[in-house]
Length: 447
Image (cartoon, rainbow, N blue to C red):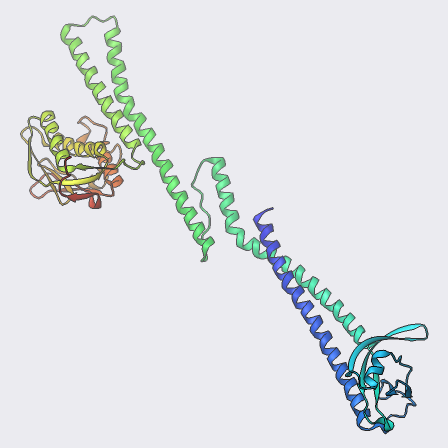
């Protein structure tokens, strides 16, 4: 059963229960009220005769009621209509019991007439104790109640039908956003394109659901677009070294005789291209891991930076690497990924420093700062330096695929931190990798 049908059924059931309870209550209250009025009328007529026995002569009905008076032994004294006298009446007549009301059936001309009767004591009537019986037909009341039952039944059925219709309308209106979400999800599943959006409007849970669904679609669309762009860019970047490798291999395997220097140059070129390919593949794998949460463990950031500095001195021996301030800092995170991020910052600074350049590295307050004295960053390039595969016009003559700084940003964000690029005072660029809550001052206890 669909959710819409269940909501309609529940709404109809609740209204039906309320209508039935109201109808039954109305019927019984009305019946009780009519019977109370009848009993009051019977009691009033009996009281009139008790106070003034001479008012009844027995020749005709008294006030439209059938009356019968018996003495204490149950013998008829006066009557306006033949009313049966039984043991219960005689007990009231001789004072053995109190008066009472009862429903009886009077038979007349082969007809059974329902009636209501009061039996009341009649002290001192005609010089002796006795009882008075006053009876009225309840046919009018029964007809009234029958009409009332029919009216209540029709009203109940109409109310239930109206509730079913209203429940259907309300469920349709209420579930319209859900149907739109379902339709959008089905279309996205068929086409694989999360560019569709569902209309947003109103307030409440369903409106928030629609907004959340659109937010999810936007994130999914952005993720798919990033993935497509990543695959396209990676394919483009990999094609260049692969083409160069293939060309050099073809030359080496060809019929052209090469001298020792030419062969050595080709082999050096192959080695350089293979190293670049290895670096590019490593960067791509690192970016592929960027969506995963880092495997956290505590490590010394200051020691990691010092180890990476030694590696940078070996890689760029013509650059002077200075570390004036390296405070003991503990980081909760992935050491390998953090080392890759720091190395990318140092490698970037080393490439832009040139021979005889100076790079200053510091670790203070949970922040790694790398400052070079190169040409700095152009204003139009600064917002884009952390984008994947982005290379400025000046960087295109240098080796690399434009992934190093992008990896730095991914690692920083995975650790809850940030990285910013700025031009340093006096020339050069400064990169600041801030780890915020992931870093704390101090040293780990050695066991």
